[in-house]
Length: 153
Image 1: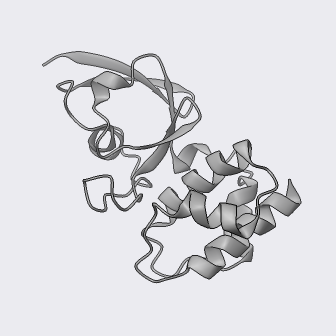
Image 2 (image 1 turned 180 degrees about the vertical axis):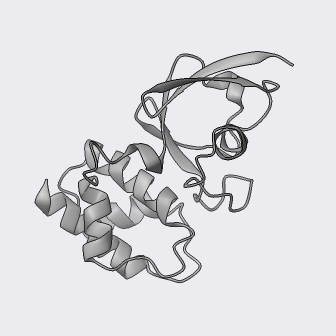
């Protein structure tokens, strides 16, 4: 089995997996970072979204071999020194989660989006988040949380 070293949330990990294994499996099964959820396995729902060098990607279809020297940030890596990321704080304040299953992917997308568009309109938020599905239908709260996070930044 080949050995691969990846950087996740600021820490280097060495894993023994084939290069075709999806990043999501490595994160959850090998590293125990279970905040990244498995939804559809086909890049359709967004539950598995993580950052790869700051860009949101779907970890369910990203082979570990494509990570290379890039840094992976998961939902577990957003908080710094015990302080939640402003988007995570806004999620709580806006009471977004119901079942919570899609939330880590939604938050990861929102964080990346706000880095590129710190003062978005509602339309821009809807467009940016359109690829993320929420079984509970909390879309209105998701938009409110992103607007709240943008105001706090």
